[in-house]
Length: 381
Image (cartoon, rainbow, N blue to C red; front, side, top):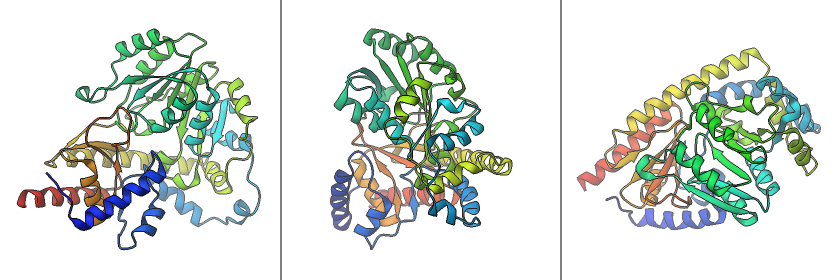
């Protein structure tokens, strides 16, 4: 079993204080570096972005005259949505831009105040954090012994029994990385009545093999909502940009409650690139390269004695440790500068779990080397 030395223990105690201040999300890298100036941040394996796609964007950003994008007011929501519409071939009157996907999640969970809402556990915490305060939540447990994979038949039967107003499905799921195939998601949707709404969060769908998104099925639909984060697959978390495909009546309702000017000039610059064929071609190559590196990273993680690695269709892996997860987390961050995500605050996840994002090949190798070193030292000790 791994144990912490005195310095590591002091570090972990202070980190837990920062974590409590951040709620169910991780403290920012800026906060950590300010609190621990002696620590070197080498790999951000906590926040989830494609580094190869980021490089494609950043090259264009640094070679562009940005004065007007910063000096003047950015376009309103609908004008930015027009660029997303061209990129997705979804009608603009069904697209709502968010200041990150999380703003859309918060708005939707607030909109359905007083409703009966079905949510799987474990999953992205913002859904149940808000819904539990405002609505009646019903939780479907994903089982560790089944690698947290959803049992479709049992799930559909459970939904029919609960008879909810809203069903939330994160696909691929965060933090488990499990995927429900497209046809199965459509079966869930078709099992619902017209007055029941299905919300599918596809923030990690571009990391799944094949074409598993159902966003095109949302065109013209009155009870299907898709949420997309652009930060994960394009590597632009700092721009705070996401979008939702939703019924026109719902979009109009949300637009009237504060979404008019919720994006910035740099986010607008980014969406103008989405119609650039050269940018699209580079993005496709970067996604394919990243997914290949992700798969190789999984193979390497499986060779580490001392942890169990769960398969994932997202851009991260959930690993299970024998010891309390903060022990491995602290050693990775304090000694190796590798920031991961402790998952012991995730509702419905019982055990010792960390989430580690896949990065580029060089950074992934640093993670593998650190894990091997940590567990080899344990054996020698």
